[in-house]
Length: 229
Image (cartoon, rainbow, N blue to C red; front, side, top):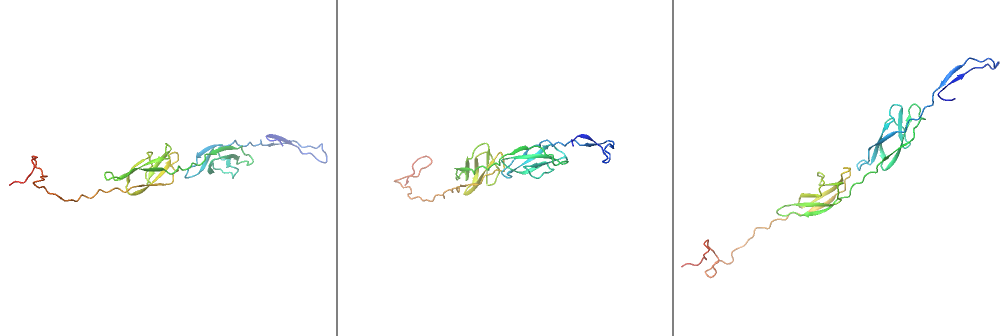
């Protein structure tokens, strides 16, 4: 019977088909329509720390709808977490009043997971001296605005130069992405030489004292000292 219409019903006697009842009108509901395809966006892209994405559905909303992703189980929640990175995911809306009413698909893509930067390369550009008993290390790769660096677990910095490093020690350097600070490289260890030590004070003696023949001692008035009788 056609939906969205009133239909007229009559009863007739089988003994006398001229005996027909009055009409009873019974209405059939209009056919339900499928909900609109869901709208949504990636609210959390993958990181090095959590290499999956999260999508949040923003429409249609309400108790009359539920949603699924990639043909999985429908759910009332509009939030889908743990989605694989670097892939397009298919979302559908379904009516809770009639679970045969399912929307068309909306595809939403999650970014590929980022990768950690390479471990830093660098060298000791200034070794300790007696005057400055610390070293300086300069990072030479990777370079650019997309990276920052730290040493021995300290604060990250944009500068590639690390001064004041303790002598006679190995120092651990790491690179971190500025786009995703969970993307941290493995460690590069760079050793600073031990600080040199000052030589000991000189020891010595006078091996030849002045004589009358070799008057090597001078007075303040610049006259040569001599032997006086």
